[in-house]
Amino acid sequence: MCKSLIVASEHPQEYYDEIKQRFAEERDLRLSYRPEGTAQFTSDLTGDFARYTVDPYIEEVLEREPIDDEVEVLFIGGGFSALLTAARLREVGVESIRIVERGGDVGGTWYWNRYPGVACDVIAYDYLPLLDEMGYVPTRHYAEGWEILDHCRAIARRYDLYELAVFQTTVTSTVWHEDERLWHLTTDRGDTMRARFVICANGTLSKPKLAKIAGMETFAGHSFHTSRWDYEYTGPNLENLGDKVVGIIGTGATAVQAIPNLAEHAKELYVFQRTPSSIDIKNDWETDPDWAAKLKPGWQAKRRQKAMTTPLLSQVQIDERATTSREEKIRRQENANIDYMMRIHRRIDEIVEDKETADALKPWYMFMCKRPCFHNEYLPSFNRPNVHLVDTHGEGITEIGPKGPIFHGVEYPLDLLIYATGFEVQKTGIWNQIVGDNGVELNDKYADGVRTLLGIHSNHYPNLFIMGGYQASFNFNLTDVLQSQGDHIAACIDYVRRNGHTTIDVTYDAEEWWVQEVIEHRGKTSRNAECTPGYYNFEGEFNRRQDGNYNGGFPAYIEHMRAVRDDMEHNFTFT
Ligand code: NDP
Image 1 (cartoon, protein in one colour):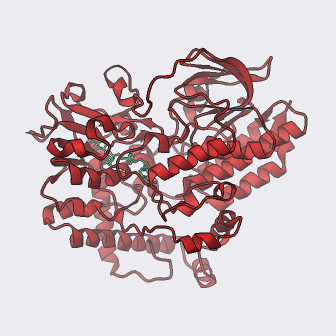
Image 2 (tube, protein in one colour):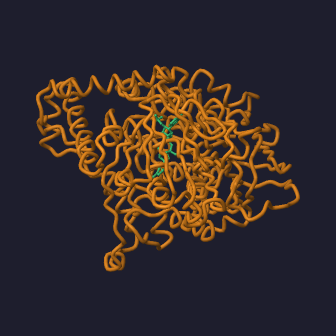
Image 3 (cartoon, protein in one colour):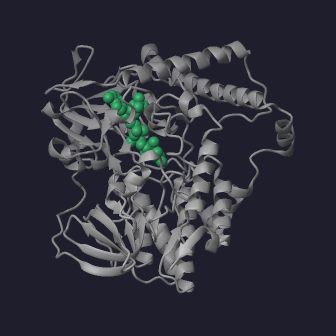
């Protein structure tokens, strides 16, 4: 990864300036192709596109009578956000907990993403939550998707979350009724549920999106999105692809994991690339049983605590930083970042035999402008004679005909076209269904910018908690953020119950303080604007300053949470 500040740059400054110039040109090229930003995608998958959201993993559509009842806590979504928080709520004695989930089981991301090769490239001992509570040690350094999904199910069983859960059910409206001090929810199954507390646990990247490509609905072959993998078509081990010509659009973190498997099994594989990912080595291994046996109770909590409290910089570095100008710090950081990215380039040259393909696979942007990837078989896949990289150099596929994608007049006939085009980011389409105590939809409240305290509470939406959303901290290990939020939410609900209150709502002032805090920290860096477009920077929509993560750092975020809870009566109103 990027070197520390005290390491001198490896090359003369002109070298770095030239590369930065190339980064800027590559970014501008992409912005010129897609000035419409996030509007280049659609997640309104209805009509012709409805089949891209159908759940291929359920055995049958469940038939059940509509539910008309009241619970204490209701989760919209059944992924890690819900599971982690529900576990904490059980610990403080909350009995009536319901998960309402669109899919056929708990698991969220890990329920939907079952593409071949799916794995998590965050270390499993950190990523999988509640390992202490569950008495579980992951089987590998980097867990595969099936193991994570199994862990989700085990948590749901351990904390009795299946009892009231409803699956294959989508919440369609969430409206606060002040007279009853309850949320009323409706669903696509005709349910009318009431809940004292509602937790939006519907994920940050949960709704599949498609690039809007002219003629895509005319494609006559088979097609699906990576989060709805059609194993009936491909075969459970992709054995049906031996006589199939397969294409995949996109080369993000999902495609990087799926492509090596497709390469191995498809007759021909066409990879339609717009921007390459950065691919580093994945140091994976099976968990050493001797190491696992020696772990003491509470090991994961200790590991987390250590990660949080270990200083990132040594005293020498801290002293040096104090005497280094801001400009110089940025310059050195950028140079170290460029050194890292050029190492990524060299690795491509070492592995990929065809020079033109190797060059096309080189990412020209700063590390972390896009989600970094770690994979040992992705780059070698391009040495296979059946794998063809169709590099669109920033332009992307803009046309699909009945036979397949068309790029610069060349048509690529396919049997199967796979969309690895990602997910709608964070809003996940539900804010227009949440109506607060003033009759205003959350979406309308957010029209001029997101407004929350800690990304969790929003004024006029009593007893509503939002997880994983905008204005929360970013951390490469998302479950750390979700766990901290789950702990906070459970503590808030516990406070309401213990003090004989019915509702909790954040004050306008506390919310305004946090909005300004988010804006201030986001303003400290021009990095978003300098990055190549992607979902990290809203595809180049740079004006949305408060609609993003809190950039003050994860430890500071946790401290703020603690401080907010230390002064509950000041930050919230209760009834
Ligand atoms: P992404 O949004 O990251 O990638 C979408 C891809 O589609 C990009 O490569 C994009 O190119 C490409 N694309 C979009 N439109 C076109 C077009 N018209 N023609 C060609 N290509 C196009 O989605 P992913 O599903 O890959 O990943 C989403 C997130 O899921 C990751 O960032 C990560 O957070 C998470 N994830 C995590 C994993 C883990 O190990 N923990 C594994 C897999 C996913 P461009 O870059 O130019 O926009």
